[in-house]
Image 1 (cartoon, rainbow, N blue to C red):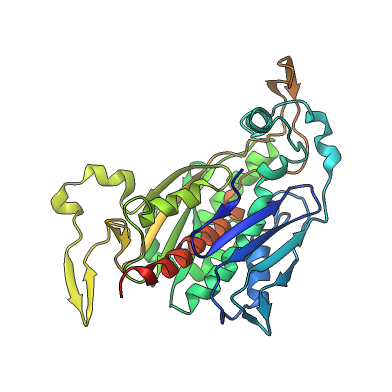
Image 2 (cartoon, rainbow, N blue to C red):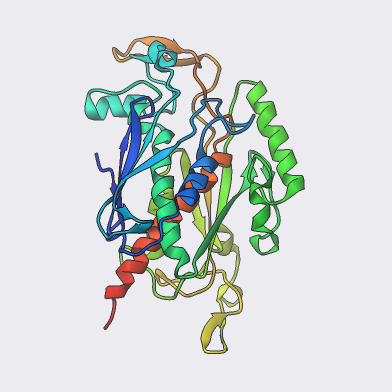
Length: 358
Protein backbone atom coordinates (compact mmCIF):
# COMPACT_ATOMS: atom_id res chain seq x y z
CA UNK A 1 0.00 0.00 0.00
CA UNK A 2 1.37 3.40 -0.98
CA UNK A 3 0.49 6.27 1.33
CA UNK A 4 2.91 8.94 0.09
CA UNK A 5 2.20 11.64 -2.50
CA UNK A 6 4.57 14.12 -4.12
CA UNK A 7 8.21 14.44 -5.18
CA UNK A 8 9.84 17.21 -3.13
CA UNK A 9 6.92 18.56 -1.10
CA UNK A 10 5.66 15.14 -0.03
CA UNK A 11 2.94 13.97 2.31
CA UNK A 12 2.48 10.61 4.00
CA UNK A 13 -0.90 10.07 5.65
CA UNK A 14 -1.82 7.48 8.26
CA UNK A 15 -4.79 6.37 10.36
CA UNK A 16 -8.25 4.87 10.00
CA UNK A 17 -11.84 6.05 10.24
CA UNK A 18 -12.49 4.42 13.61
CA UNK A 19 -8.95 4.10 14.94
CA UNK A 20 -7.44 6.37 17.55
CA UNK A 21 -6.77 9.10 15.02
CA UNK A 22 -5.33 10.20 11.69
CA UNK A 23 -2.33 12.21 10.71
CA UNK A 24 0.15 13.38 8.13
CA UNK A 25 3.88 13.88 7.82
CA UNK A 26 4.93 16.65 5.41
CA UNK A 27 8.49 16.34 4.16
CA UNK A 28 10.24 18.87 1.95
CA UNK A 29 8.46 22.01 3.13
CA UNK A 30 11.04 24.82 2.94
CA UNK A 31 12.05 26.59 6.12
CA UNK A 32 10.54 29.99 6.78
CA UNK A 33 6.93 29.36 5.78
CA UNK A 34 4.68 31.14 8.28
CA UNK A 35 2.44 28.42 9.73
CA UNK A 36 -0.92 29.92 10.62
CA UNK A 37 -2.62 27.37 12.88
CA UNK A 38 -5.91 29.27 12.77
CA UNK A 39 -5.92 28.90 8.99
CA UNK A 40 -5.24 25.15 9.20
CA UNK A 41 -8.06 24.85 11.74
CA UNK A 42 -10.43 26.78 9.47
CA UNK A 43 -9.64 24.49 6.53
CA UNK A 44 -10.35 21.41 8.66
CA UNK A 45 -13.62 22.96 9.85
CA UNK A 46 -14.74 23.25 6.24
CA UNK A 47 -14.24 19.50 5.77
CA UNK A 48 -15.38 18.23 9.16
CA UNK A 49 -18.45 15.96 9.49
CA UNK A 50 -21.65 17.04 11.17
CA UNK A 51 -21.53 20.63 9.91
CA UNK A 52 -25.06 20.82 8.46
CA UNK A 53 -28.30 18.95 7.75
CA UNK A 54 -26.98 17.77 4.38
CA UNK A 55 -23.82 16.12 5.73
CA UNK A 56 -23.12 13.09 7.92
CA UNK A 57 -24.12 13.61 11.54
CA UNK A 58 -20.89 12.17 12.91
CA UNK A 59 -19.54 14.85 15.24
CA UNK A 60 -15.81 15.46 14.91
CA UNK A 61 -14.27 18.85 15.57
CA UNK A 62 -11.08 17.67 13.86
CA UNK A 63 -8.83 19.53 16.24
CA UNK A 64 -5.21 18.96 15.29
CA UNK A 65 -1.85 18.98 17.00
CA UNK A 66 1.48 19.86 15.37
CA UNK A 67 4.13 17.50 16.73
CA UNK A 68 7.22 18.68 14.86
CA UNK A 69 8.68 20.86 12.14
CA UNK A 70 7.35 24.21 13.38
CA UNK A 71 9.10 26.61 15.74
CA UNK A 72 7.88 30.06 16.74
CA UNK A 73 5.25 30.03 14.01
CA UNK A 74 7.54 29.08 11.13
CA UNK A 75 8.47 25.88 9.35
CA UNK A 76 12.00 24.75 10.19
CA UNK A 77 12.68 22.72 7.06
CA UNK A 78 12.33 19.46 8.97
CA UNK A 79 9.35 17.06 8.67
CA UNK A 80 6.07 18.57 9.86
CA UNK A 81 3.97 16.00 11.69
CA UNK A 82 0.30 16.63 12.50
CA UNK A 83 -2.24 14.40 14.20
CA UNK A 84 -6.04 14.58 14.38
CA UNK A 85 -7.63 12.42 17.07
CA UNK A 86 -10.98 10.71 16.47
CA UNK A 87 -13.54 11.47 19.19
CA UNK A 88 -16.90 10.21 17.90
CA UNK A 89 -16.30 6.67 16.66
CA UNK A 90 -19.28 4.30 16.80
CA UNK A 91 -17.66 1.08 15.66
CA UNK A 92 -20.66 -1.00 16.71
CA UNK A 93 -22.58 0.56 13.81
CA UNK A 94 -20.46 -1.62 11.51
CA UNK A 95 -20.43 -4.96 13.35
CA UNK A 96 -23.22 -6.21 11.07
CA UNK A 97 -20.90 -6.04 8.04
CA UNK A 98 -17.84 -7.66 9.62
CA UNK A 99 -17.94 -10.44 7.02
CA UNK A 100 -20.18 -8.82 4.40
CA UNK A 101 -19.24 -6.79 1.34
CA UNK A 102 -21.10 -3.50 0.90
CA UNK A 103 -21.99 -2.83 -2.76
CA UNK A 104 -19.65 -0.33 -4.49
CA UNK A 105 -17.46 -0.03 -1.38
CA UNK A 106 -13.83 -1.11 -1.01
CA UNK A 107 -14.78 -4.03 1.28
CA UNK A 108 -14.39 -6.81 -1.28
CA UNK A 109 -11.29 -5.45 -3.01
CA UNK A 110 -9.45 -4.73 0.26
CA UNK A 111 -10.37 -8.22 1.52
CA UNK A 112 -9.03 -9.85 -1.64
CA UNK A 113 -5.87 -7.72 -1.85
CA UNK A 114 -4.78 -7.80 1.81
CA UNK A 115 -6.59 -10.81 3.26
CA UNK A 116 -7.70 -8.72 6.21
CA UNK A 117 -9.76 -5.54 6.47
CA UNK A 118 -10.87 -3.05 9.08
CA UNK A 119 -14.64 -3.08 8.63
CA UNK A 120 -15.22 -0.16 11.02
CA UNK A 121 -16.37 2.52 8.61
CA UNK A 122 -14.10 1.16 5.92
CA UNK A 123 -10.92 1.65 7.95
CA UNK A 124 -8.16 3.05 5.77
CA UNK A 125 -10.45 3.18 2.70
CA UNK A 126 -12.76 5.68 4.42
CA UNK A 127 -12.90 9.27 3.20
CA UNK A 128 -12.04 10.26 6.77
CA UNK A 129 -8.42 9.85 5.63
CA UNK A 130 -8.83 13.08 3.66
CA UNK A 131 -8.78 15.12 6.87
CA UNK A 132 -5.02 14.57 6.90
CA UNK A 133 -4.79 15.75 3.28
CA UNK A 134 -6.68 18.94 4.11
CA UNK A 135 -4.31 19.69 7.00
CA UNK A 136 -1.30 19.21 4.71
CA UNK A 137 -3.00 21.14 1.91
CA UNK A 138 -3.42 24.10 4.25
CA UNK A 139 0.35 24.21 4.72
CA UNK A 140 0.81 24.01 0.94
CA UNK A 141 -1.63 26.91 0.55
CA UNK A 142 0.41 28.98 3.00
CA UNK A 143 3.53 28.31 0.92
CA UNK A 144 1.74 29.14 -2.34
CA UNK A 145 0.28 32.36 -0.93
CA UNK A 146 3.79 33.80 -0.68
CA UNK A 147 4.01 33.35 -4.48
CA UNK A 148 0.61 34.96 -5.11
CA UNK A 149 -1.21 31.69 -5.93
CA UNK A 150 -4.87 31.43 -4.86
CA UNK A 151 -7.05 28.31 -5.17
CA UNK A 152 -10.85 28.39 -5.07
CA UNK A 153 -13.15 25.38 -5.42
CA UNK A 154 -16.94 25.29 -5.29
CA UNK A 155 -19.88 22.97 -5.94
CA UNK A 156 -21.02 23.41 -9.53
CA UNK A 157 -23.44 20.49 -9.68
CA UNK A 158 -25.47 18.30 -7.30
CA UNK A 159 -27.39 15.53 -9.01
CA UNK A 160 -29.16 17.13 -12.00
CA UNK A 161 -28.97 20.67 -10.52
CA UNK A 162 -26.17 22.44 -12.36
CA UNK A 163 -24.64 25.90 -12.04
CA UNK A 164 -24.63 27.29 -15.58
CA UNK A 165 -22.53 30.42 -14.97
CA UNK A 166 -18.84 30.36 -15.96
CA UNK A 167 -16.44 30.82 -13.06
CA UNK A 168 -15.46 34.29 -14.31
CA UNK A 169 -18.94 35.53 -13.36
CA UNK A 170 -18.83 34.14 -9.82
CA UNK A 171 -17.84 35.78 -6.55
CA UNK A 172 -15.80 33.17 -4.68
CA UNK A 173 -16.35 35.11 -1.46
CA UNK A 174 -19.91 33.73 -1.53
CA UNK A 175 -18.88 30.07 -1.63
CA UNK A 176 -18.92 29.74 2.15
CA UNK A 177 -22.20 31.67 2.50
CA UNK A 178 -24.34 28.52 2.24
CA UNK A 179 -24.08 24.92 3.40
CA UNK A 180 -23.66 23.42 -0.08
CA UNK A 181 -20.72 25.70 -1.00
CA UNK A 182 -22.12 27.00 -4.26
CA UNK A 183 -21.35 30.72 -4.89
CA UNK A 184 -24.70 31.30 -6.64
CA UNK A 185 -27.52 31.67 -4.11
CA UNK A 186 -30.40 30.58 -6.34
CA UNK A 187 -28.62 27.45 -7.53
CA UNK A 188 -27.45 26.72 -3.99
CA UNK A 189 -31.04 26.71 -2.71
CA UNK A 190 -32.04 24.19 -5.38
CA UNK A 191 -29.07 21.98 -4.56
CA UNK A 192 -29.81 22.02 -0.84
CA UNK A 193 -33.47 21.18 -1.46
CA UNK A 194 -32.50 18.24 -3.68
CA UNK A 195 -29.86 16.83 -1.32
CA UNK A 196 -32.21 17.11 1.67
CA UNK A 197 -34.98 15.37 -0.27
CA UNK A 198 -32.66 12.53 -1.26
CA UNK A 199 -31.55 12.22 2.36
CA UNK A 200 -35.16 11.85 3.48
CA UNK A 201 -35.57 9.12 0.86
CA UNK A 202 -32.65 7.30 2.53
CA UNK A 203 -30.65 7.55 -0.68
CA UNK A 204 -27.64 9.48 -2.03
CA UNK A 205 -26.59 11.53 -5.08
CA UNK A 206 -23.33 12.64 -6.69
CA UNK A 207 -22.09 15.98 -7.89
CA UNK A 208 -19.29 18.05 -9.36
CA UNK A 209 -16.69 20.28 -7.69
CA UNK A 210 -15.08 22.90 -9.92
CA UNK A 211 -11.72 24.44 -9.04
CA UNK A 212 -9.77 27.49 -10.22
CA UNK A 213 -6.11 28.26 -9.47
CA UNK A 214 -5.07 31.86 -10.12
CA UNK A 215 -1.60 33.36 -10.11
CA UNK A 216 0.18 30.13 -11.02
CA UNK A 217 3.58 31.03 -12.48
CA UNK A 218 4.65 29.91 -15.94
CA UNK A 219 6.71 26.72 -16.04
CA UNK A 220 5.12 24.26 -13.62
CA UNK A 221 4.85 20.68 -14.86
CA UNK A 222 7.38 17.97 -15.73
CA UNK A 223 6.84 16.48 -19.20
CA UNK A 224 6.54 13.92 -20.41
CA UNK A 225 4.95 11.68 -17.79
CA UNK A 226 4.36 14.26 -15.06
CA UNK A 227 2.62 16.88 -17.16
CA UNK A 228 0.87 19.26 -14.78
CA UNK A 229 -2.65 18.26 -15.83
CA UNK A 230 -1.72 14.57 -15.54
CA UNK A 231 -0.54 15.04 -11.95
CA UNK A 232 -3.64 17.09 -11.10
CA UNK A 233 -5.75 14.28 -12.53
CA UNK A 234 -3.82 11.75 -10.45
CA UNK A 235 -4.36 13.86 -7.34
CA UNK A 236 -8.10 14.31 -7.90
CA UNK A 237 -8.73 10.69 -8.87
CA UNK A 238 -7.02 9.60 -5.63
CA UNK A 239 -9.85 11.23 -3.66
CA UNK A 240 -12.58 8.87 -2.46
CA UNK A 241 -15.66 8.60 -4.71
CA UNK A 242 -14.14 10.53 -7.64
CA UNK A 243 -15.19 9.16 -11.03
CA UNK A 244 -14.08 11.85 -13.44
CA UNK A 245 -11.62 14.69 -14.06
CA UNK A 246 -11.89 17.33 -16.79
CA UNK A 247 -9.67 20.37 -17.32
CA UNK A 248 -9.79 23.29 -19.70
CA UNK A 249 -12.28 22.86 -22.53
CA UNK A 250 -12.49 19.17 -21.61
CA UNK A 251 -14.90 16.97 -23.52
CA UNK A 252 -16.74 19.98 -24.93
CA UNK A 253 -13.56 20.92 -26.78
CA UNK A 254 -14.07 18.08 -29.26
CA UNK A 255 -17.02 19.97 -30.78
CA UNK A 256 -14.83 22.93 -31.72
CA UNK A 257 -12.58 23.48 -34.71
CA UNK A 258 -8.89 24.17 -34.22
CA UNK A 259 -9.39 27.74 -35.38
CA UNK A 260 -11.92 28.18 -32.58
CA UNK A 261 -10.04 26.26 -29.90
CA UNK A 262 -6.56 27.75 -30.30
CA UNK A 263 -5.68 30.35 -27.67
CA UNK A 264 -4.13 33.34 -29.49
CA UNK A 265 -1.13 34.98 -27.81
CA UNK A 266 -0.67 38.69 -27.15
CA UNK A 267 1.49 40.79 -24.87
CA UNK A 268 0.28 42.72 -21.85
CA UNK A 269 3.12 44.82 -20.54
CA UNK A 270 6.04 42.42 -20.15
CA UNK A 271 3.80 39.31 -19.97
CA UNK A 272 2.66 36.94 -22.68
CA UNK A 273 -1.06 36.26 -22.34
CA UNK A 274 -3.75 34.35 -24.25
CA UNK A 275 -7.00 35.93 -25.45
CA UNK A 276 -8.97 32.78 -24.64
CA UNK A 277 -8.18 29.96 -22.25
CA UNK A 278 -9.48 26.73 -23.72
CA UNK A 279 -6.15 25.20 -22.67
CA UNK A 280 -7.10 25.59 -19.03
CA UNK A 281 -3.85 27.31 -18.14
CA UNK A 282 -1.70 24.35 -19.20
CA UNK A 283 0.00 23.83 -22.59
CA UNK A 284 2.36 20.97 -23.34
CA UNK A 285 1.85 19.83 -19.76
CA UNK A 286 3.33 23.09 -18.44
CA UNK A 287 1.50 26.02 -16.82
CA UNK A 288 1.35 29.10 -19.05
CA UNK A 289 0.39 31.70 -16.43
CA UNK A 290 -3.35 31.75 -17.19
CA UNK A 291 -5.99 30.45 -14.78
CA UNK A 292 -5.91 26.70 -14.28
CA UNK A 293 -9.45 25.38 -14.08
CA UNK A 294 -10.90 21.89 -13.86
CA UNK A 295 -13.89 19.84 -12.73
CA UNK A 296 -14.04 16.77 -10.49
CA UNK A 297 -17.00 14.38 -10.61
CA UNK A 298 -18.06 12.52 -7.47
CA UNK A 299 -20.31 9.45 -7.56
CA UNK A 300 -23.31 8.99 -5.24
CA UNK A 301 -22.23 7.84 -1.78
CA UNK A 302 -22.16 4.03 -1.77
CA UNK A 303 -23.73 3.63 1.67
CA UNK A 304 -27.50 4.01 1.45
CA UNK A 305 -30.00 3.48 4.24
CA UNK A 306 -31.68 0.63 2.35
CA UNK A 307 -31.28 -3.14 2.17
CA UNK A 308 -29.02 -4.29 -0.69
CA UNK A 309 -28.16 -7.67 -2.16
CA UNK A 310 -24.60 -8.85 -1.58
CA UNK A 311 -22.37 -11.76 -0.55
CA UNK A 312 -20.24 -12.44 2.52
CA UNK A 313 -16.59 -13.47 2.81
CA UNK A 314 -17.60 -17.10 2.27
CA UNK A 315 -19.31 -16.24 -1.00
CA UNK A 316 -22.78 -16.81 0.41
CA UNK A 317 -25.72 -14.66 -0.63
CA UNK A 318 -26.67 -12.11 2.02
CA UNK A 319 -28.36 -8.76 2.59
CA UNK A 320 -26.52 -5.62 3.63
CA UNK A 321 -28.56 -3.17 5.67
CA UNK A 322 -27.60 0.49 5.70
CA UNK A 323 -26.52 1.71 9.13
CA UNK A 324 -24.18 4.33 10.51
CA UNK A 325 -23.78 8.02 9.71
CA UNK A 326 -23.09 9.00 6.11
CA UNK A 327 -23.31 11.96 3.74
CA UNK A 328 -26.28 12.02 1.34
CA UNK A 329 -23.95 13.89 -1.06
CA UNK A 330 -20.21 14.31 -0.57
CA UNK A 331 -19.55 17.43 -2.65
CA UNK A 332 -20.17 20.12 0.01
CA UNK A 333 -17.40 18.62 2.15
CA UNK A 334 -15.25 17.71 -0.86
CA UNK A 335 -14.58 21.36 -1.76
CA UNK A 336 -11.67 21.81 0.70
CA UNK A 337 -10.32 18.36 -0.25
CA UNK A 338 -10.12 19.30 -3.93
CA UNK A 339 -8.43 22.59 -3.00
CA UNK A 340 -5.96 20.75 -0.76
CA UNK A 341 -4.91 18.26 -3.42
CA UNK A 342 -4.54 21.05 -5.98
CA UNK A 343 -2.37 22.99 -3.53
CA UNK A 344 -0.18 19.96 -2.84
CA UNK A 345 0.43 19.45 -6.57
CA UNK A 346 1.24 23.11 -7.22
CA UNK A 347 3.52 23.42 -4.18
CA UNK A 348 5.42 20.30 -5.21
CA UNK A 349 5.83 21.44 -8.82
CA UNK A 350 6.77 24.95 -7.81
CA UNK A 351 9.74 23.49 -5.93
CA UNK A 352 10.50 21.01 -8.73
CA UNK A 353 10.60 23.83 -11.26
CA UNK A 354 13.56 25.40 -9.47
CA UNK A 355 15.74 22.64 -10.93
CA UNK A 356 14.62 23.19 -14.55
CA UNK A 357 17.33 25.63 -15.60
CA UNK A 358 20.27 27.61 -14.29
